[in-house]
Image (tube, rainbow, N blue to C red):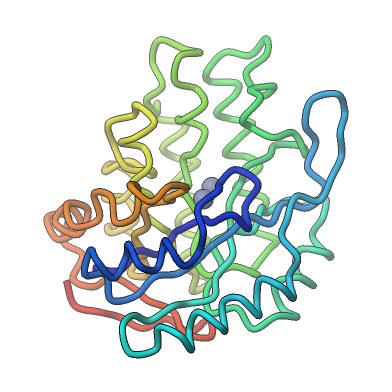
Length: 269
Ligand SMILES: [Zn+2]
Ligand SMILES: [Zn+2]
């Protein structure tokens, strides 16, 4: 088992110590773990607070190298980051991605027009169709313009926040067509997607993206795919990953992907 999406106390929304996460992963029989703490540049939150929400990069790198050395014989530890992708901050984001020796970068859309999705501004006075169109247009523009990531994180994250806002959060035909366009570009550019199992914890009772999107990715020829728990707590590490491998196998995927110095490596399922 490999967990390719784990946060620690280097992320604002987690208090998990990195050592404890590594020990837990070893206990679960995980062979490789990628730490992917949050880096969101210039994100807007309530009271118009504009900030860079990220760890001290030098301290983070040093800590991960220390962990790699300490646990060398017990588990592979990869240096990753979950990078909030925003066209508004393109230059600084690319600078951050390319100036540090990351093994793996999850590119995620946590903001729309700089606003953190978490606060649900996206849905204000919008129908579900309008909100989804805005969200997927943003993702489409990002995948057209930006290449500083390994896999796109939880591609349909909008579903997590739309839950409770609308009666039906499923994709209609127009939305599926937009997702198809996004996936085509990701594939053409040699990038991948992640399957994020946290949807099971957030009440979606499904992975992000959904099985339907994963099927589309497969049918378009998508091969690069990582699986991660998006753990922010010890008990989330490895969560539903084995079941997700089974799901991917059922959908016809033969490999999952690991990354070393941003190069993909395929492991047979
Ligand atoms: Zn995320
Ligand atoms: Zn995450």
